[in-house]
Amino acid sequence: AEWAGRGSMLVQEPAKRLYERQISYDITPADAVMEAVVEDGSLRMGKQRYRCLIVPRAGYLPEALLSKMEWIHEQGGCVLFVDALPDNAQGVCAPVVTLSRLAQQVENRGFAHLSISPANPLLRLYHVRRGDTDVIMAFNESTVETARVTLKTGLRGDYVHLDLLGDGSHSARSEDGCVPLELTPYQSAILVFGPDLPELPARKEAGRMECV
Image (tube, rainbow, N blue to C red; front, side, top):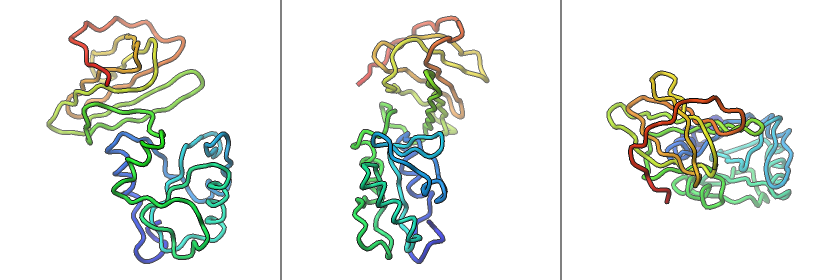
């Protein structure tokens, strides 16, 4: 929306608020929004499903696009405008949230399906679901601090922890939907939940972090 009128918001601004709270997102073109349908409260765009459409502040958006966003809202889909409606959005009834409270609003609506404790704004998470398999990638962006967190996934059962650049790959099991993570600076890990997992050695227990 940064090109759409005076006072418009760079897309990096809401993106930063989300990724610092480990909330996954995609940036979608207007053409994809125009083709979106609402199914069971979610937006389907092609093969992807989204719980919410977040619209950065823009001075102006095309009338057809605004009409589509209003239709999505009326059909039960979530549309959140950040900071303000566009100047030409008279009559649009979708909610407006402030940039400072965007991530909290997404969490309060139950759209953030991953969370960590304690908070760590430099830990990046990305979650993909393909059929019965869930894949979560975690990456520690810090150059100096090791990230030690409990990742709450809501996924229970066997999983594999893949450390593709090191020797820490192992099999494990989560009974409560939580996974302990310890990532050194710039280290990444991939967690895979689902059927037909490869058999890897179990990791030696080094103390359990509680899921809260």
